[in-house]
Image (cartoon, rainbow, N blue to C red; front, side, top):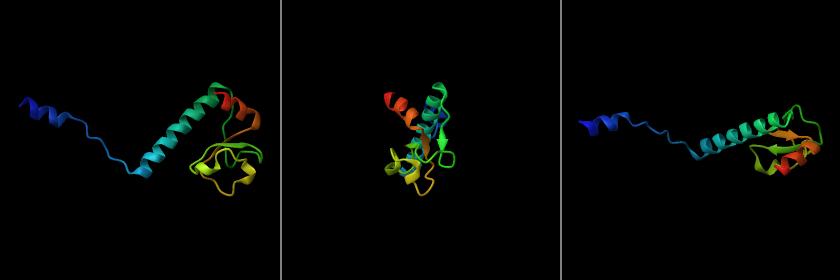
Length: 92
């Protein structure tokens, strides 16, 4: 009877598709980035709030990372920092 009870109480783990896992990892990175910004007194910028020369730090499109905002043609749920703040980011 005890074995049956333990099987019933095990939590079921949802299986995610590869796309869902990638999205979950990305949002985890976004949370880490926003926490870093908060700890360093920096306002994270989005596609709509970034200046033309702000640098892409995070994006759903990995090819955009490191490019300036002015070179972006669409919003890929990207986050940006000013060139000065980008130097702080690179230092860790």
